Length: 287
Figure (spheres, rainbow, N blue to C red):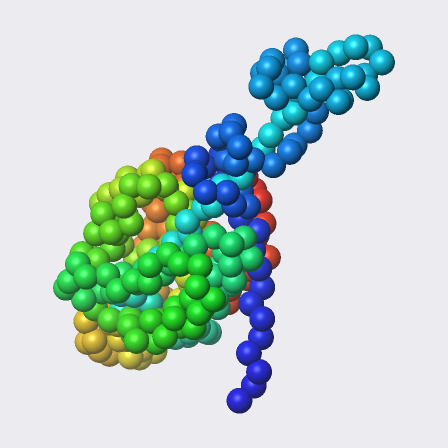
């Protein structure tokens, strides 16, 4: 057995400070005792008599008053959500589940580096609203627990009840959500999902396989399997049929990009492998 590699880490923070009651690693909004010293500024720039620094003021040759500015630091609850419908079991150039496992381990390691509680929610594709989950925790064993949960819930089915129930499962308290899915969803379902998660800071990762576009032959018999129903179908592929399929997929992705944009969100494409640096760049661009 090859030794386990250490997951890469990703720096993350919401574009706006989150209000919280517990001290942590991220900038917040509260100006109270749970804060770190930021800098000194003249009193007229921040006229708060409670934070006058007498020593700094006494040393100033111009006799000005100085105020200590504080930067509140809060904990962020991180929730990793994985779509486990049948299509997420696709294997082409790579295994979607292998990509998911790499991403989950990276995100958990990053949350632990920030000392943020992190949890995992799996939205299965069976006809059930039940959502297997690992509650947000600071336990050192969370990585192994998440790996075991992923192994215990294989991608199956095509129902979206579990995914549609996600907003009520997550709750209303704002948190950072990483959503991993191929987003092969009806537009109306995706619209309701984004609306239901509007209170949270959402980072959406679309898991794709390069073989889904360009690898299919122009002519010939193709054995197609519907991963969500388990049914197979032998089709004779021809250029016109391939073009229609590629056009339909292109239109779906364009509609989804516009739908995400209408909710003030965007998608990061993850093709064939999880790239921690690409995710880090994506998060920096949104900060």
